[in-house]
Length: 152
Image (cartoon, rainbow, N blue to C red; front, side, top):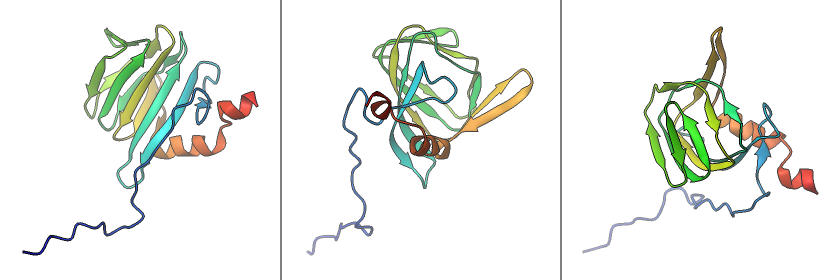
């Protein structure tokens, strides 16, 4: 019996490798460049999914928002206040599509992995402030100076 051909139809497919670095690839959040930093690990342009590392310094607060797609969060180090819970190093949380919550606060310097499966809409008592999706993260990655460039 002949073996089934399992070669990929798209020869350009390959794994993505992002090497760990304290400065390489990180860029500051334009809304709070002193306390919030992001590293894009992967963006699925065809699916709208994105994998991010966040580094939030103590006191940073993300505004109230609604998840338009599901998200996965794994705390690498530090503590985050999310709704009524405090997430600590090693904690994992899944948030389904449509989840709404108030501000998310870094209770101490915190790094976490965030897998987002759709946009996030930010709002306040007056209405919508904006949204973030994989496209906004890629635009910021292309336009924001990296920490390695700022320290050079």
